[in-house]
Length: 306
Image (tube, rainbow, N blue to C red; front, side):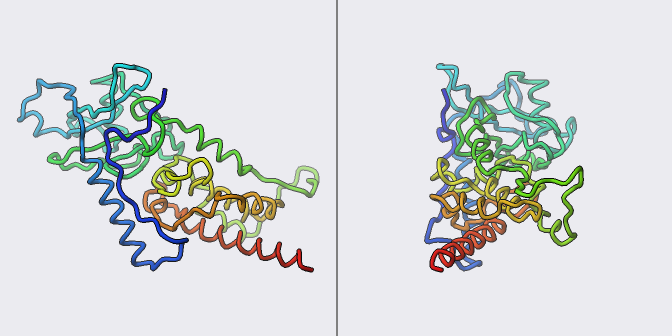
């Protein structure tokens, strides 16, 4: 039994307009309004449980409060809530994941989360930290003890338990783009496929993606059509293989992406690039991808009229 994360957090209102032709200043304003709405929404707490109700006000004043979303859909007696934990920041390293592991090891072993590398490489610990989707292992804790830190699962995803969400749809969509080199020319012996320096540079800012889904789960278009729209993370990886000079299935990839709303539902809102914990720019990649698709369609129509 899975339940969408909506009971505790009020959904922010996002602007949605005509197809991706907007003034850049307006787009920037909408982006920051979106972030502001997200933070305001996450502060509307329906229910908070104190993990240690015996702490005094003086003890609390010297520690950081972490409000962590807790819910086990498999337990029919459980319900979505925030659990309040207080941590002495002097006892832990500076990242959100450090706090979560300290809480799990010292306070509450039942807390569920994903993590692995602790270096921002595996993408496992993606979650919502104070209103933005980030990798908990490389996102620093706000040290202001007067303000609580909010930690919730990735938004608009089915919650498996606590901070763990179901990534099945995301990985299934990734599989559909054939994320590997495809060739038509038979390989000669054991030679590598050589690229020029210029061709190799086209992959910079693309191959570094760790598939954490922070961008896709921050995208309003992906919330509305997760069954059809592939989302910024998957589309950026599709673009990565399309611009790879070693790949020989460029037109076939473009043809496949041109179907339905796999790409076209992008509204250029920009949350994908704003929230990316690796500092990548999915919005820019998707703009280039949409241009390539339009050029492919024009070529296809032109060749059909000959």
